[in-house]
Image 1: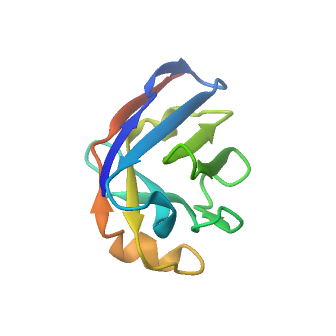
Image 2: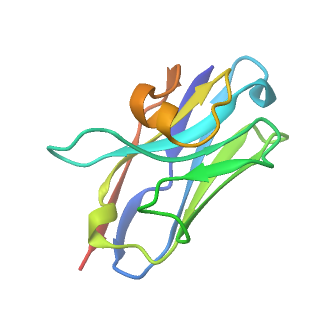
Length: 126
């Protein structure tokens, strides 16, 4: 599967952005999807994951209540709606895919996912 994230940009603190990730290749609905981010000088961080049908999601504590992951299998796209953005949300955001669903965030936080796309920069100004 090939993945490409887009929709990043510069936004003021408190603002919103919606990221999209388009997938091509093997059947999109056979993959679980996730968003990760990496800030300069920091390790990659798990943000959110969503299962094949979209009825199960997990979030990092740092974004819970502010970010929402969703997917549209008909459009081969996964989204990340980001509200109430903070300067500490500044990072390169990448989408990822995997064939196995892991409950919770621990597994993906530690091991990531099997397929990765190019990221998109999100910058939140104070």
